[in-house]
Amino acid sequence: MATLDKTVYSGKQFESYVSIQSDALGTNDVSGTLYKIRTPEINDIDTSAGSIFADAVRSGQRVQRPTDHIATYKGGVFRWSFSDYAVENEAALQMLLQLVSEDDSPSGTVAITGNQGTVAYEEGSSTGEYACVVISSPDADEDKLMHSSILETLTLTLNPTVNGGRLTASGTFFSGYQPVIGTEGTSANATAVDYTEGFFDCTTMSIGADDVVINNFEVTISNPAQRVGYTTVNSITHEPSAYMRGGMIEVTGTLSALLDDNVTDTIQDFRDGTSVNISIGDGSAIDFDIPTAKYTGYTHTNTDSGVFIDLPFKGTADGSDALITIKAT
Image 1: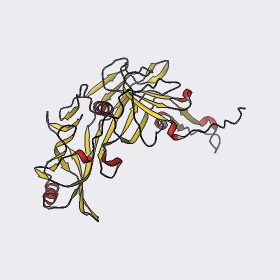
Image 2: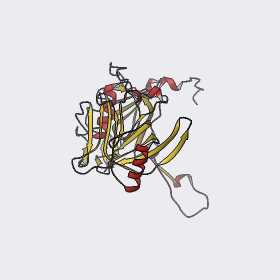
Image 3: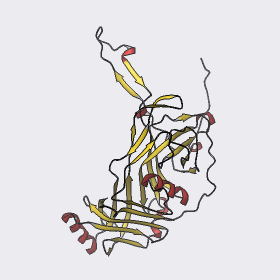
Image 4: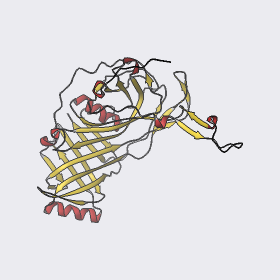
């Protein structure tokens, strides 16, 4: 029996890194340029969906036998989520936008259109926007690598009361490949704090052609993937043979606007189902444009600084028209 291990770790000793994986899908090594994602708390990789449990019902006794509980660690999926990342690295932000949008050369501006095609990522192939996620542990033998990961959702928030108004990001990565536990190389990109844009840099805040006073803004891009098939990879059986990104791409969000005549007009847009253009930014370093948004509701919020209307929305697009365009330089 092992003796008691009295080692104590602080949560602040853990760090997270993400890269666009340069090796082929299924390769269980760290590759690509790693960027440190410094969040208030580092979440562990969620392996609950990677384990499949079942209880077989068999005759002979009324109590379940130990062998009747079936557990397998094959054929599942794994996820890692990060939240409240006060964006500080321009290249890291562009990497996240590239991963969620499938844009392989964003150049600071990412656009998702109505005719976005389906994408199949094949095991052993280097086509597709997928990532390495590394959780660095103070115990070097317990580093975790979730390779061949798809960024399913990315949420970007502009709120003057959070992180000094800086642009804040949250998201969830998905992988069908078993995480690797061991010592991983985590030399982050040298460019550190070079992005400081946020709410207070936005000089344009408009709905349709009308300027409005916005209290906060949040938008989520959802572009999920599904694991396909079963094959042996890295001597592990029942790993994915491919991923498919062929479902709906959704842009949803909410904004809070001060109740005035312009906002009263846009409430009528909700009632009529009219499309509105939502535009927030400075036109150069930070910019969000959702050309044909549809409101999905509205609620009043009474504050000491006035009455604000919370307007949840979703993006729509037809053909080559833009669903959303984001500029981050």
